[in-house]
Length: 277
Length: 327
Image 1 (spheres, rainbow over the protein chains, first blue to last red):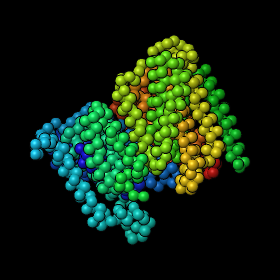
Image 2 (cartoon, chains in turn red, yellow; image 1 turned 90 degrees about the horizontal axis):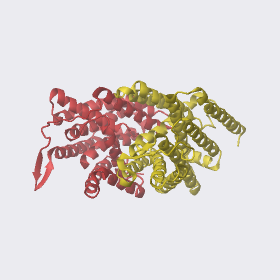
Image 3 (cartoon, rainbow over the protein chains, first blue to last red; image 1 turned 180 degrees about the vertical axis):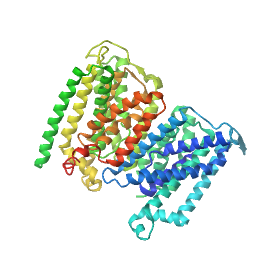
Image 4 (cartoon, helix red, strand yellow; image 1 turned 90 degrees about the vertical axis):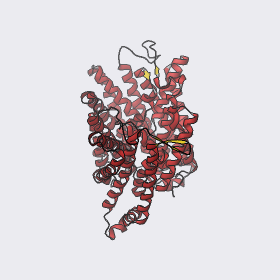
């Protein structure tokens, strides 16, 4: 679970690290990915595991489009820049939720028979539900891929460079908007991946994103905004804290543990565990 | 103090007085209960947004957790009333002071946080409050509290026969919030806030002074929002954690100011006057289907306005004077 939180959060961390924008529609991106997985399953009987790359690709396009249509303009604002970013992405979240309600109705849906649904596997006497296990493996693979991508490829370097000095980057012929759009696409693709896996074991409804979004923000902030590794570590911590709180407190209070740990961490380190500056 | 600023302040006060008188007279014309309800909500959100604007707009500390103070106001009033029989007026004051105290206690750790860290911490703290109230049996847990009917009087702050007393209280609260903002704008705090907002690093060198002015902003803002919360509780005669402390309240408080113009005197009022009737009307005319069309319209407007007019609708009116004064 923690690794999945990490995977949801890492897309957010990427976008933030890239251009200092927090995507307040992040949860809604997740919701869209879950619906996409559901419909691929319902109409074409494509198992979530197979549709994950498709959904990730679709979200990539979606993320890039959102950047080009909205975020690009939000970043141009001179006055109240922070507010404009927060509220334009918030507005987008509200629209997306409304659209989901309009087209898909507020009903709860689930992907009933995935290859993995409900199965468990026993490792050294501990029973693990298979979907969660696969989710964890996919997350680790995605992190490894992303890490490699950012640190070893030309595009990754272009991202870094654009973040550090957009002006100088323009001089060497890199189009800032293209790089940022690709970055948004990449962030959204990661959410797409998490959404596809989560569709296996969570109900899908228009507000589903909201419940995960706050945990994603906490995860990112815990690790330190802008640090992909921090988001990964933050995810693991959040997962562990959640599991521990569930032992002590009633289930309805399990997120309180996460929030409390988050507050504790930022009070001691206002920039998160792995945040710089 | 330059002349223009002083002149503008006098004019603002004059316009506000005229508007207040006009608003006070509307019930003479508007007898429709449905419309009166919209007017009351509009005034309430104008007051809430104005209060939110003190901390988040003037002082630049964007809070998306003000639902906590709203809920505290509502709960303090109603718990004191239903459990101990304390009159809502005292409950209102108690709720306001509790909220102000909590806001200041939270200020110690929170004001060290910058930007998004601060915003997320405020969301998180409100969410913790919500979860705790949802699990607090004595306070009615998730079911909430139904406020018993004890008659129709100003003493008990309950009115069955007419909405007018609620209307006048909401108007008074709105005027109070406006006047406090107006007054603070030209106070020492007001100048420090502008310093904090425009240049945090330079303001830092003023140290304690800045910190105290932030604390003041947090306390005043929370106090007024809590009063709004206890008003809302009395008005609806029913509260539950989600309906008074849910995240949507933090947003609903912020939106009128964002729409109208953050950190301006008239932004919240203008924003509420447009946004709240629009929300209510879209909800009752196209939202009835339960299919979210109202959300689509509403969200689209927020995106468009925040992108097209980052300084809010107020900037349309005051292109010339917004240069120095309105910020």
